[in-house]
Amino acid sequence: MEFFEYIFDNGERILFELLRHLQIIGIALPIAIAIGVPVGIAISNHKKTANVVIYIASVLMTIPSLALFGFMVALLAPFNAGIGVPPAVIAVVVYSLLPLIRNTLVAIREVDPATVEAATGMGMTKTQILFKIRLPLAVPIIMAGLRNAAVMGVSVTTIAYLIGARGLGYFIFSGLSRSRLIMVLVGAILVGALGIGTNYGLLKLEELLTPRGVKLSRSKE
Amino acid sequence: MQIRLDNLTKEYDNGAFKAVDGISLTLEQSKLTVLIGPSGCGKTTTLKMINRLIERTGGDILFDEKSIDDMDRIQLRRKIGYAIQNIGLFIHMSVFDNIAVVPRLLKWPEQKIKNRVEELLELVNLDPGVNMYKYPAQLSGGQKQRIGVARSLAADPDVILMDEPFGAIDPINREKLQDAFIEIQEKIKKTIIFVTHDIREAIKLGDKIVIMDNGHIVQYDDTINVVNQPENEFVESLLGSDRALKGLEMLRVKDNYIKDFVSINAEEVKTVGTALEYIQKKEKSYAYVVGKKGILLGYCTTERLKKRDKHDDLNENVKKTESVQPYSNLMEAIITMVESGLTSCPVVNSKDQLLGIIRFKTLVDIMSSFEKSEE
Image (tube, rainbow over all chains, first blue to last red; front, side, top):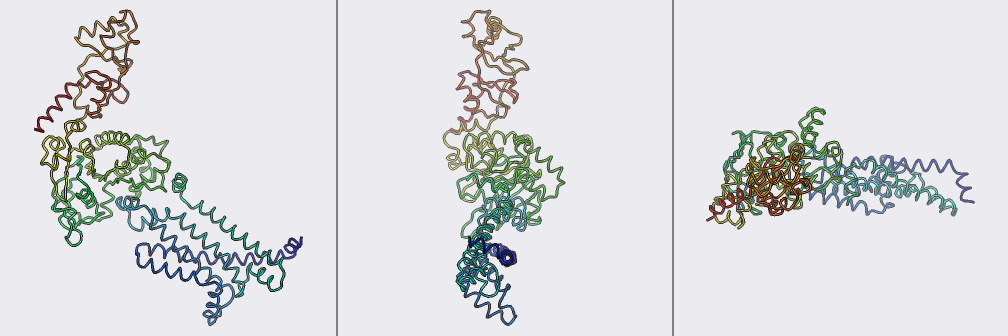
């Protein structure tokens, strides 16, 4: 009962932090897509460069999020951006790069060589092959990378509360420091639900964006 | 468009390996030329140099005596139809969009494209209404292959390159596709260069055959000459010991059937007695029976008719039989005869109307002419 009481009493606050949380992810993901997908495409033709880029992205991803925030607070302080939303957005972008670059790379590379040969033999230019053949076929795999990134973004943003970005992390961390377990529980449930909801929403989007023919051939396998 | 290969060469590793070693030949216009040989003989490399999927390292390729170097690679490819073994259909595109790829690259108006797609689907024997907006995943292997062929014809190219287009199909459907394809080529008369490793397919489809080995041409001649006069032991072994039989596969029923034969029209002849009398007068032991509009019903033998009362209904004494069509090959005709036990085989059109018969004696004569040249 106490749980629902808390939610009723703090409805406005919950809405605010939820929107803030979504705002951070909502800014970060388009930036991550704008960087990750083109990079993935660009390196798909160069094996060595691809290996280096994937390696760097993997290293970035292994940095614990608290440490990353530490770096950012120190490095961005001179620009007056060490705390708040900007470092949180940057962190989500950094962690999203690996799944997006890696999935784009794999998806573009693994298009059936016979398909590409047919397209080339029919007189498509490289650019036409990329936009008319490779990318449409790559949609499901790239979207899987995006879902991966988004779910990770939800959890990273939670921790970003610690550097003043606000968001749903407020309920968890404030709750902990005040020993108000109900508050922690509300925060945890909200973050969990948001993660699941984001994944579900993006799955629906994936279904919408995946060409019909690709879905049919997948369901056949 | 005439294509001439002049001392065409493809070297790898700075000349350490020559996949194609200075071949020269002129591909005849409106003919289907088959490139055949063991794997690694350079047939596919030769084919792919023609649309520059592989760049040659020496010699030249001339289209109507114009060097391939003087043409834009992309524009050239749009003018050459291309069909490959794994079909390479775009799974995310409908049948319509797959066929429309090159016409769209060439910026044809949409209405013209739509008409063309419908026309091509009819040509490859697929109902446009049913199939136009299906996706490759909804088609059978044979249907996909037909779409692959239709797609290579889309922009009405003068030249079509085909790299084992029926390679991935089971033998039964492959035969059907080949028969259909022969009929299509009869209508469109394109210059086709066709790569295969299947000698039966080569004999069946090719107007001319280029036999390759180790990057060289071993023999280039009309199919009938290759079968009759193999250049050397290599060609003989490629043809196999049953080449007289294989020879039958390249010959069409339409060039070997006779229209002068005995048949009975069941519309006019109703009784066993009249029929028997008619056949005996013609000094035959059996006759084909046709019904309304000349549609083949079957045949009746004098042996059977004699056992019946002469007032019996003729229709009840007609035995059904398989038939062949003008574009079937003589091998199919022999098989039909073996099954029916008759010394001839009826030839019908697509509406089952009796056109003529093909006689066993004709086939024997043809085979013995192959055997003779074999000695």
